[in-house]
Length: 401
Image (cartoon, rainbow, N blue to C red; front, side, top):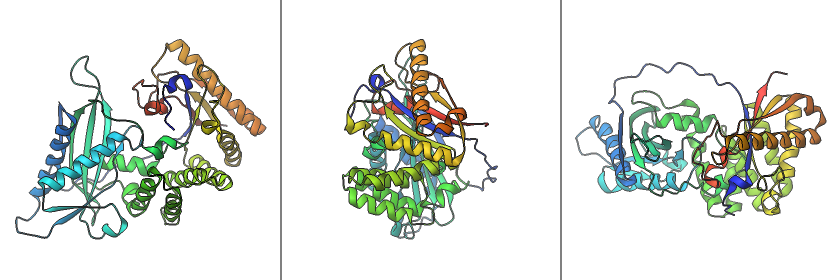
């Protein structure tokens, strides 16, 4: 169900955040330089510029002899800020594939399926990111990043960027992400985003690249869910979970979503408990709630708020098991005055804390609440609907006990 004007309804997102560590990237080997074009174009023009630049870099290193077609698989593209797939990222993926098919006959765009990983030579990834326009006073634009990775060695061989004007692009999340109770952006998704920005000659992010085979199953499962084939989706998500790299938020969240859609409440709660446990163990948990306008009361429609008791119960249980201390921080979208949003964000964070304390009284001395208003947006559009739901959240940050 699509819900409009959600700023009044307010989404709450609980996030457990931890410190990330990184290792220095290896020195790049000789390769064509990536290209970044900051000119602002129509969406289709920007896609063509980025795609053509990507292929020009790749073709410099290819033999001019007549050869068999080189296979390319495309891992579904995402919004870099949220990690979500949207109508716009799906359109980007389609336009890039169309450009390759129409202008580069020496390449074969193959379905993103596990059987094709051994047949294709290249893996194509791509993101969109909302950035400030170079024109004073102009609306924000989208930065498009594309990268090609050699599937045999895991090295990025070409990377290109361009900028597209937002001319009515559909930034609504696709059904899986719209329905998700959690922020589905873990280290694997972060690795996908990082790979799409990696200069040629450097390795693709290993956390992402080493899990590409599982990503093909996740992609098929998510497509089945988006098409309302929930039993097929559940089977595929379970298949993904059974792989060596299947313990991912996207997988466990998919099992929860499909189970809930199929009316399997007990299985759904078990799956959600695993989502929470994984999120807490990796300091990366986000859970979304909707409130009635201007209140701390959960959204009245049971079709929306029906599973909230389940979510709260599992969050409390898993937090007790993990023995964590947390700071509960409320956030809002850009709509409304600063004073109002500061107050509302604090009140809703305090309400979530109270509900968790009721579920597990031992949590009371280990949590505290505060409000950040609209000072830390993720999306930042102020559309107050499903597109910027992540901006209206309560963040759970690990604290010293």
